[in-house]
Image (cartoon, rainbow, N blue to C red; front, side, top):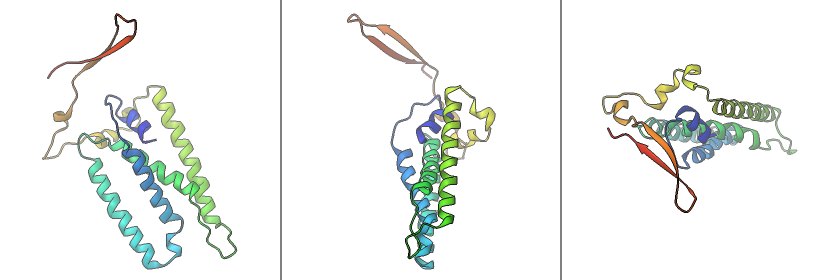
Length: 179
């Protein structure tokens, strides 16, 4: 889902990496905390929540730096949290039954994850201009600070062309205008 978010919100940029998937695992850690760490003890619950909060704050700061694909990070984190809630249901009672609250959260999370995935895929396949639907999204992609300007990281116009080589195979060239 992180890759879909990156393609949807930053279609003009080519991105690589596994950070969206890694943050999906981190979202699963939040789901684990929500689904059951508070059943152990209050001290364990608070320690786990403080650690997750500090790590999440750091991830948000790093994600908002220029040349970092924030949408892949946030998409992975959100989908990891939702899918984690659906599949990380913990047995809480002595008779090994699953709590009703956990099942309810799990089903709602799974439905939300499926709806988000379907909506993002449809928007991506129909060439929807996401910034018309969600104008504030541009602020997450890049925002000016005293340390950098978004203009500094703007891409040159590029053109993809196809040529047939002498051996008959297709060769693709990416030609970008110099600045």
